[in-house]
Length: 185
Image (cartoon, rainbow, N blue to C red):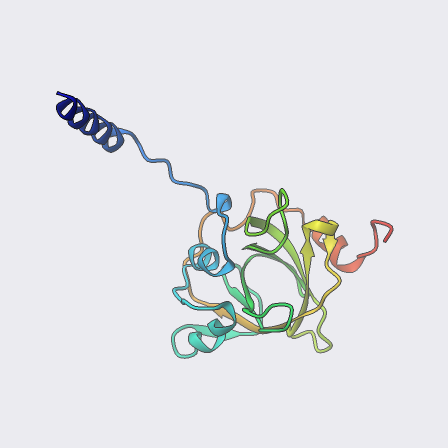
């Protein structure tokens, strides 16, 4: 009798789970590594550590040094980023300032891995070629103090609809980039 009741209950749970609508989670609810997030956000189907994306894209996707919405920016491997980092350009604000949507950069609620939308990225390279950048860092509410080398941008995926917000803060992004010491540090 117990076995029959358990089987009936299992069938009801299965029927309810099949009949119930499945809610798609928001891309921005993501918590994890930057690589799967960038793949989902950009539509670019490359796998492996972030620093390997640049060479893997050769011959498969267009590459370059000009930011475009939906492009994946590939951060080089360094001692601070031993696996590199990938992020997706959500908006181009002006020649040296873009907004990124990425995961696993700043801490939120004391932990890394969360997605962040429309984060300021500033080109600080001597030749204005996006080879060195600074990234907005939630922990200090401004551009981080570190400069990161970049390999370039990978183009060609189909970006997610949640890549950018409805009303991104262009003015804030420009202030973050060009007036980095506005917080009294």
